[in-house]
Length: 552
Image 1 (cartoon, helix red, strand yellow):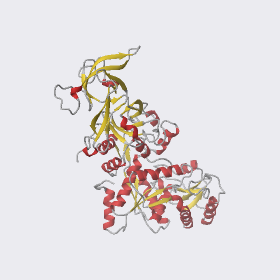
Image 2 (cartoon, one colour):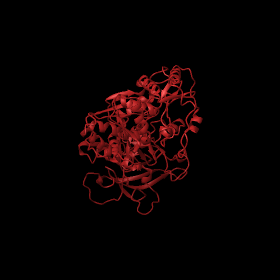
Image 3 (spheres, rainbow, N blue to C red):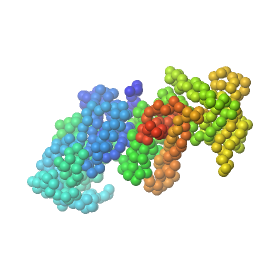
Image 4 (cartoon, rainbow, N blue to C red):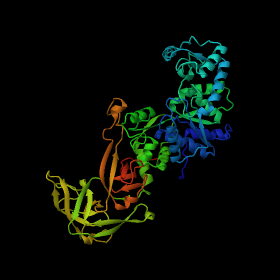
């Protein structure tokens, strides 16, 4: 992994203080996703924070699946999450599942019942909401709140044995129905769900709620710093209550930080799943998706994502980061390691009428002018080439320096050519142009006879490799432009597909290979649709942006 300088933030300072004061002997963090979908860029920030924090202080970072809701969880998501964490450059010091602790959690719930701190409730979800009260009015005790310990123990055991239907009963904590914190108004600890679990099968039909399971998992694993996003700040009193009342030997501490929000980006697994389920995108790994799998397929690099996360930092208040900042780090990472090459995305054929028929010469070009160690490449040149359609205009405006009748331009790494004739179809569309070249103007020859203002790229026609190019725009429009639901903000122009050509040396390219196409941007070989008969490139980012990092 690349060298990095740890930036100071309030969580890191807490860890330093805890170690210096002897509050903890070894730092243990955890990344605890629920396997109910694919991870997105917001999760990447949490992964990087937890793993790098633990490793900086020679501690441990756990990967733990909070799999307490069998209805929404699947092994597919477990495997995808493991792959994402590995791809980001991290390895866990322990792999755990909440479901591994179901027996322990059940026993702790029984302990709460015996202490008079939990009871079985028969209220329907609707009535429970009514009894809960409002922000200005305290809640009302459930009529089942004062059941005896013996009755609660019996009912809870029967819940486990499968004697009741889904939703018929729940186990609730007995805390304070008048608490100003809604999370402390007798929250549900267990619910009934007759659903098969990806890890435990049909062994259980009752499952712990997240707010009960999560603190117990942290305590069991010896987690020292339980890092959560800000929406869990109001849950912290319940987190501490569960650890204390369940008499856990180890006492973890929860700390909250601001989640990552990006412009034009949905950061909700529920909404992302909706995009997948309604076929608005091509799966969780669609390159327009902000999932780690989508970014990987599009061509983002783990190095760039890590650098981006460090730059964003760790804050106490939520804010929205410009997506162009992430793109900045992609360019910074790729500019020294992506080979340069030429691709014509929207081709127009050019015939160089005074170039010898049947002749092909090899021209030399740098693989990456910003990294001389990458050496040179060979490019074929002949009488027929392809250029971009927008590099030619029959009737150009002022200050148009590319190709038009009577004008001369330089072909990148090749010669000067001059347009002489335009060939059109029956409808008047330009289908081919005829040019002449000046053999004295070969690139690198030192020719100084005259200068031209325009340089255009090209691909030799007889050996060009057909390719598909996918150009992306944000999937979600700026919400200020459309105040409807998030589906109303879907950008209908988020994907443009073009058919063109790349240089013949691209025949051997492999999925996930990355290139800089002259003038077009950085591209990645698509890992899903590229095969022996089809070569697909995803544009990662354009070449330039007006975005600049704020000065320190």
